[in-house]
Amino acid sequence: MSDKKPVESRLQSQVILVTGASSGIGKESVITLLARGHIVYGGARRLEAMEDIKALGARVLFMDMTREETLTEAVSTVLAEQGRIDALVNNAGYGSTGAIEDVPLSEASRQFSVNVFGLARLTQLVLPSMRLSGFGTIVNLSSVGGRIATPMSGWYNATKYSVEALSDALRHECRGFGIRVAIIEPGGIATGWTAQAEASVASVSGHTAYAPMAARLLRVFADYGPRLSRPSVIASLIVRAIEARRPRRRYVGGFGARGALLAVRLLPSFVLDWVIGWQFGR
Image 1 (spheres, rainbow, N blue to C red):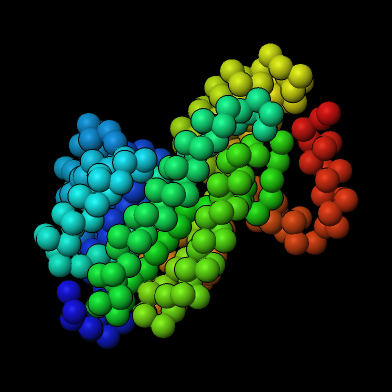
Image 2 (cartoon, helix red, strand yellow):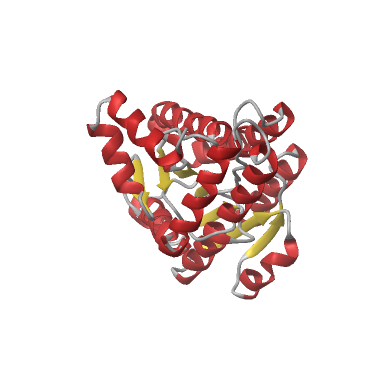
């Protein structure tokens, strides 16, 4: 664990832990990393949904981001079997939608537990071994929604804004230990996220004072559906961040991502507010 090889040799075949590996971006990332010769552990709650990546050579672990004991056990297993963890991909997360007034605080708290506190605790668990070896990469999955907030997604946006802030602080804190931190900011990706968001906005705000805005969001989802990018687009960015000698601070990809972030950077706040208001109605 204390073996400090040159960075170039450490990048070639790494021990990588990927969360949320049972579907979507996480599963695609595991498949891509395996194909590139890395030793990959995939973690998720649904072990049966990871049988396919297990058949490809991945080691699968039961991980529930809201249960610390499962995170501790997963990290201990990897370290016991491999002696090190070179990269952590914090991909696990979800987004339920609805007006801020309508979403129960218990649900808001659960989103933070999964998207922020689970991510943070797992990061805490892998950092000591990375510091000891003098090498490591933390890849945190944020979202375009971590840079721009939109109606009906306020609680999800809040979790992803938090991921952005934690990642930036972590990058500064860990630079002197040889640990790199990269943020991935996906746009629209064809995963189960959209179906879950559609169901939650309909049930939470579909019959409240915010029903017209909820209906508009459902129309936006329907319009964007055919144009969503494949998970492989983001998986390729994750691979780039892990294998780069000097990874970028942020990687952006997926439907609508670059255009949205360009608008955030260039448009005055009042113009951006008008655009969002026009898109989602009032």
